[in-house]
Image (cartoon, rainbow, N blue to C red; front, side, top):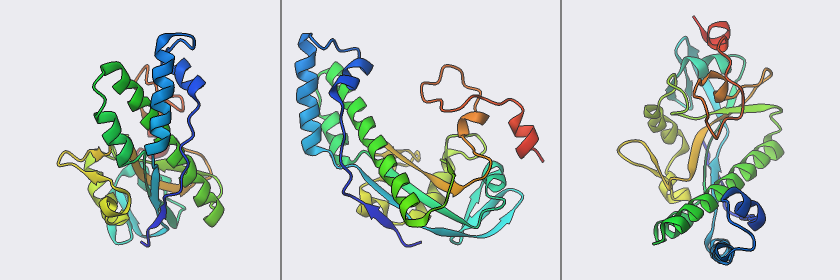
Amino acid sequence: MQPILITDIPLELDTSKLAERLHVERDGADMANLRRMCQEALALGKPKALYGLAYIDSKDEGGVVVDSVTLTSRVLRVNLDKVHRVFPYLATGGVELEEWTNSQQDILQRYWADAIAEVALRCAMRALEAQIEERFQPGKTSSMSPGSLRDWPMEQQSPLFSILGDTRSLVGVQLTDSLLMVPRKSVSGLRFPTETGYANCQLCPREGCPGRSAAYDSTLWQNRYGR
């Protein structure tokens, strides 16, 4: 796969929305510190993304081979049943904001910095999705990320990263021995065209998840992915 880099991603921070999310009173003493931290982040932040066009070499009951790399997941295999090309990707809030967050001595301000870095990651994801749409016009797409489902566990980060290439030199992201990404505000996965629509949350029964984007469907596994 030929990697495509996106490095000119603007960090867009809405201080008012951040204050509301972080429960910072707009007229309180903490607001000045939050504004200061936003200015620091704007000066330092460099969200980045990496993706590419890859083709599916083969499929079997338990997974697919993408760019000569085997990815093992029944859900992924079914989702890619009528798909011939995919977009492996990696997006990150950036090493710069990771180091800045870790440098915060105050616990509350470190929490704020973490939230700002999360915004940077979302900026990177929006830029990534927009560029895939503009360059390749895949139509409606969905994505899957290793570790988001038991069917596609964290161990699958290794083969995915082998498709992505030298991620450390390209965008500053590396895998730890426990297969976590550093910087922490990073996300990897496969984006793919879909006619039916798909979200990992549909297969996840976890209650009270703040990141839920779709309702849990208790019948979906058996109806679509069961053998």
